[in-house]
Amino acid sequence: MHCLDCRATGTDSTTVGVCQGCGAGVCAAHARIAPRSVRRGSLIGTPGEAEARTVLCPVCAAAEAPAAPALAAP
Image 1 (cartoon, helix red, strand yellow):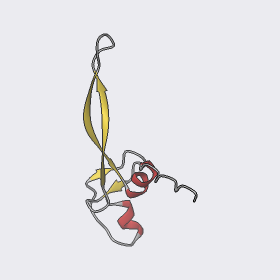
Image 2 (cartoon, helix red, strand yellow):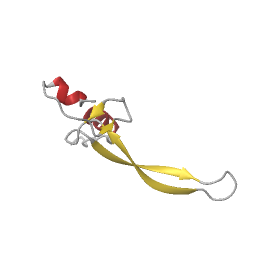
Image 3 (tube, helix red, strand yellow):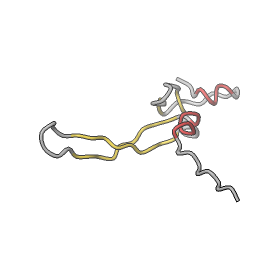
Image 4 (cartoon, helix red, strand yellow):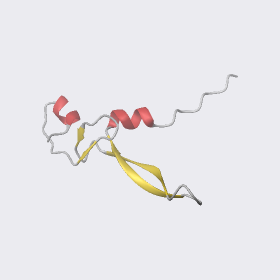
């Protein structure tokens, strides 16, 4: 499988992952690793949380990034 973003620029790069947002193949240069929290445990008792990671393409990573704070009007 080849990287979708590299393919759009006319080059072929082997994928190292698949974007969890859109399913596009991404190469090492285009892969964005984002942290995510995973809840685990039973319904009874206190659930635990663990840190995990997810692979995103640049487009989905930008879409999921927190918005910049609005500038205050003078």
